[in-house]
Image 1 (cartoon, rainbow, N blue to C red):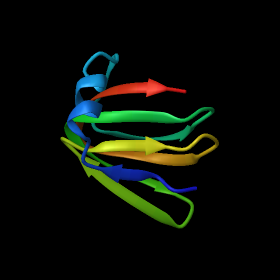
Image 2 (cartoon, rainbow, N blue to C red):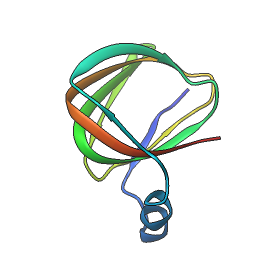
Image 3 (cartoon, rainbow, N blue to C red):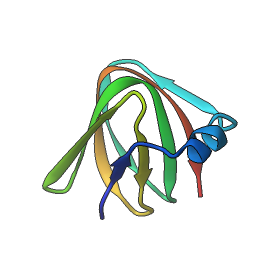
Amino acid sequence: MKIEVRKPTEKEREEASSWPVWEKEVSSFPWHYGEKEVCLILEGEVTVKAGSGEVSFGSGDYVIFPEGLDCVWNIKKAVRKHYKFG
């Protein structure tokens, strides 16, 4: 399962601005995605480890997590993101 990280289109950025905001301090925790999540990172620096790989992202990135993914979040700088499940 692959985590997609890229820069959002202008349309995606506008759409994401209406989504809820999630914030979390520097921390590390396991997570399971029971459904797909799409998010736009507003602030922070994060590395997510899944299986034998890991991906890093931060402010301005558009990130898509696939349904069924098991991973560990490692938040290096407090994160704020717009997010949408499903």
